[in-house]
Structures are given as C-alpha cells and as structure tokens.
Amino acid sequence: MTSTDHPAVAKFTAALLEAGLTDSAAGIRILDDEVRTAAAAANALGIEVGAIANSLIFRATYGGKVEPLLVLTSGAHRADTKRVAAIVGADRIDKADPVFVKESTGQAIGGVAPSGHPQRIRTLVDNHLATYAVVWAAAGHPKSVYPTTFEQLVALTGGTAADVRSVEDDS
Image (cartoon, rainbow, N blue to C red; front, side):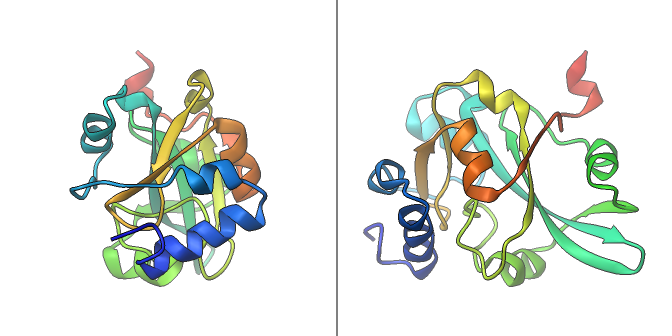
C-alpha cells in the first residue's frame, strides 16, 4: 500500500496539502504492520512513546445531544475524561465504539488522523505534546503515520491546547 492507496489516507493527505503542510504530507509513512497503540507506533518508529499523538474519539454528551470529540493526547499518559468534560463543558464523556469512530471520522480505530474527517470535529490537543520537537500521529489507517508538531496539530484541527492527562499521571 502506498500513501494514496487507501481512501482515508488519501483524504488526509489532501487535508494536509490544503492546509499548506506539504512537508507533513510528504512525510507520511506506511509501516509494515498496524500500529493501533502508542507503544506499537513508538516501537516501529524507534522513538519515545510520549512523542506519539494518540487520536482518541469520545462521545461527548451535551444535554441530550451526543457529538464526537477528538482528543490528541501524548502516548505517555491517558486522557482524564472528567478533566476533558470540564474543559469542553460536556455533561459526560464516554469511550466511543468502533462504529461511532468510523461514522464520525471515516477512519478506523488505530488509524484516526487529526483531520480529513467528513466534518470538522471539536478537538483538544494535549499540552504535553509541545515538549517534543516532532510528534507522530496516525494518517488515516492503522499502518500509516506522519510527522508533525504540536503547533501544526492545533492549527490543522482548529483545536484547543489543553492539559488532558489523567490526574493519576500527575503524581
């Protein structure tokens, strides 16, 4: 598979190019194996797990309305759903199932890119990612990754920089 063979990767590549991120688009790598976890991605790339931007889709409930919420968090820790709910003003934040993820993003769990979705998704970008000069994120398929920066993630997604890590990780 090349970077343009898979429709979700092609759509994400187009989103990068539209945003003027040609270096990131050119940097998309297709790995030999699927890397559905931060640890697997870090191992495949030979980097620290914290430099992996996990793409987590949650079901955010506001009143009776459920919306997707993308949290790009460092692979070094987990996202705290109570903290995330407070940041976005949601009544509750729940883990999304694979069907909800696919319907919301057009991409499968383990390969959700920061953009290239059917509609813009409200996004939080973990402040911890700013501690790395380069971070790697999924590029639309579980075998695809690309290099980026914290600043580019915020700009590309129209996201909000936030401290999303679990309070258990604070200690």
